[in-house]
Length: 83
Image (cartoon, rainbow, N blue to C red; front, top):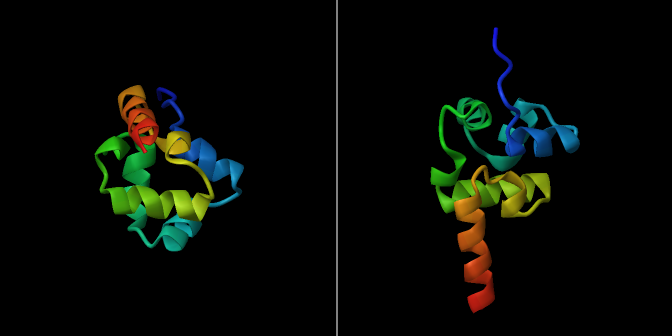
């Protein structure tokens, strides 16, 4: 079986010492969706902003810590620079 690449979301969750079910409960999101995001079956960059913020709040992290792609992170930096 091929080893899947560990997602930034999964690395952040593990660094916080949380299981998937614990994070899903803390972020009030469906545990299956969390699995999909971690496995790359669903693109976390395409998640609702509310979902992203729930995850960041539960993990006490920044969006950049969990977003999988550079484009979204770059856009976030551009947005911050405008404020």
